[in-house]
Length: 451
Image (cartoon, rainbow, N blue to C red; front, side, top):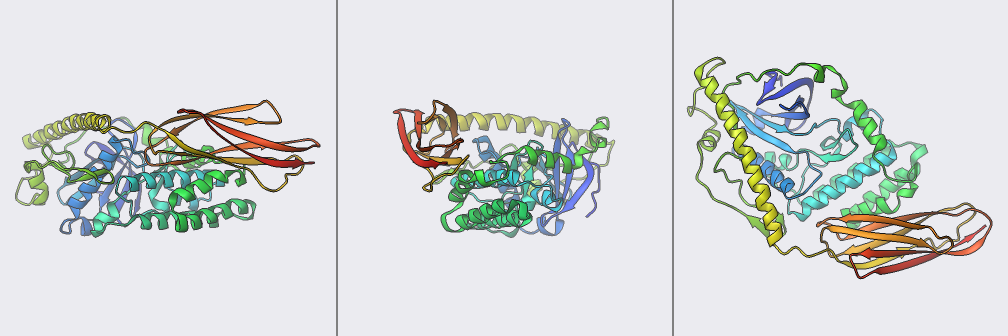
């Protein structure tokens, strides 16, 4: 599928393009010069009855979830129709993906674990909001230049097929992703591969939350002793098609007339249907159908005449697009304020700690051991901040920390790595104290060090 133009709705298209089941993805540059993406849907599928509407509803659900505070998704800037073509435009680059990094063998176990943990967290947040991804695989996990893992194409595969995937499908996709990453590492990272296999098995039996917690609790088995984004970020920057200076060095190109382009999102008066922000909570506002929506529904056949560049209708088209962009910005601001007010009025409970549990190894630890103590904090599921400290009985070191909680999670792991050296035979005890929110809660665990 050849790209017929170098610019679509102000997004400049690069030469880096690849095919997926949805259509043709193209790396792009947004009107303000940032990395972005453009998806030209396969006309054989987007033109089928009901597909456009389902795609638009899926994207508008994503936008409202992002406004409500859900992170981890590639943000969609717009969905536009240009004649028979339908384009999805993103506000974030959609490459490289985990598939790209796997093909280049540039993944490290620490970064792979980070991508798995962040992907699991995003899926759990989606499920808590009453939606699913539907197509989790290495090609839909995008790695940013900072090493963050973001999911792309959320709900689009289901929209094309007219399906609603259950959460179990996402869990199975995540488990397959974990097993694929395990298989990509050689003998030097066998312990990491075993950890990823355990996490995949845990996802199938106990769910995503338990699988994520397994990775966090056992991260000391990874090369380097923990989960980190640094190497992942370097690998992503090395694989990025935008590493070539020509994509940035080209002077800005003045917008040219592309004919009539109709935005399918945020058209004044358009309703996206019910959107759930959590189980049992939904909203729907019925409004009259607009001219833009009627044109979209009719496929623009006979509803308007496309005029070429330079005509008076072309200039009017540009003015309409800028008015639409302005209306979109106003709509987003209003929605953000409305959602903020909704959360304030909904009586969201304050963060509270329900329990604290500390676990230490049962086996005696030998000379110069590095011991992992795992603390688990269970909350009431409210967002907020926990402050805590670890105390050790055989020295006076106090390890202090903070933890940000989210509304979609109730269990958090707080690991402590304790290095012991020298000849001794002692009972070492680690005590975890949760300072805020009060009241103060504590738990402790002990192990034997013998050298």
